[in-house]
Image 1 (cartoon, rainbow, N blue to C red):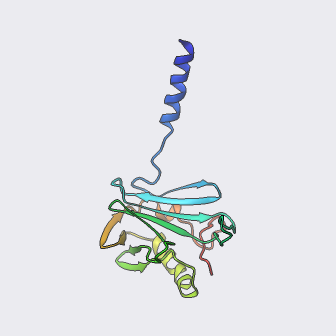
Image 2: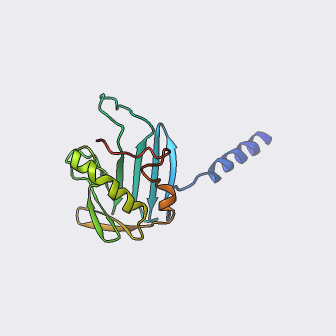
Image 3: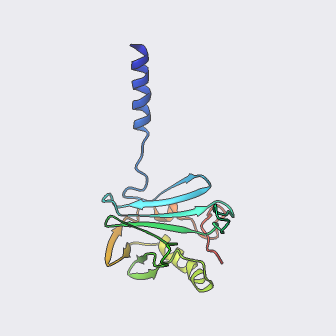
Length: 159
């Protein structure tokens, strides 16, 4: 009987520590060499920005050291580095940035610092793809998304 009771307490304790990271506000977490900055609107729409801690390669030997982002919009998933090269758009205070997390070209990479600064200072944030646009919260965004020149920020462009 005591073993069942203790096991129940352990399970309940583990369940009580579950958190829905990013719901209604920006959060940051670290896992397997990546910092993940995330937010969601509580309705399944979300934006996750994934930043490797140091230069790395994927299983195929390709450079994996640049920022990547993933969006869920109206039950559809999008990635900044998708096979079709389409990605998704980010709308910051009315200014539209087309696939801003795709930084694997000189011109793309050159516009990333201005986008990042605007994103960190956003009052209104939306993501858009395939004709669907959703609004995301900006609470804690400036605290979570560090300035590009901050040594603790591992988000960087490819070039």
